Amino acid sequence: MKRINVLFVCLGNICRSPMAEFYFRHIVAKAGLESSIEVASAAVSSEEQGNPVYPNARKKLAEYGIGCNGKRACKITQSMYDVSDYVIAMESSNLSGIRRVVSPNSHTVLSLLLDYVKSDNPSFCRNVADPWYTRDFDKAWNDITLGCDALLDYIREKHRL
Ligand code: 4NP
Image (cartoon, rainbow, N blue to C red; front, side):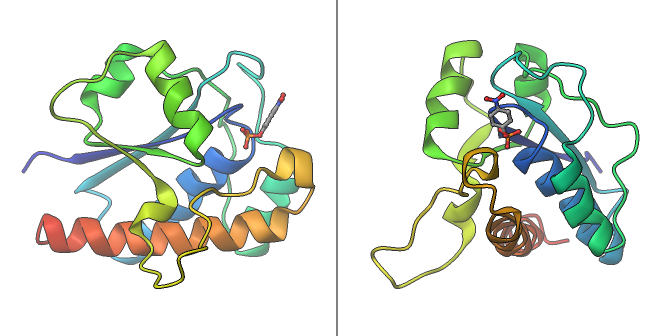
């Protein structure tokens, strides 16, 4: 069976999208789905290219026993986009950022992480708060884990995994 490719994207690829990538890998492994779902992350900007995961984000992952050794920030490319089934942005400005760097195609689903969270609250914010500016890594982590759990449920149902 063809693997499902999921690519998380944020501005720098050192805070939010790596937390999403490694948390998602963790829950995919827990569900025994490593052979079915491939996970990666990338940036919209080239600002942090080659840099490791930011210490506060690394610390947050480590609190849950999740490592991220070897991850280096990289910028999204057209081929990364085209091989992805799901490109998942952390906030709406990332969507326009992605469209500036790559051309959309007809098969890749481009969406916001928090689009997968069901909420009846009309003021529910669909953007993962940027901890680079807020310094609130706990809030970002809560949004990311909520979104990733909902995304995995969606993919499992959609692809009958
Ligand atoms: P990220 O956080 O997009 O979650 O990786 C940021 C990292 C770096 C910058 C902004 C956000 N920056 O402006 O350098």
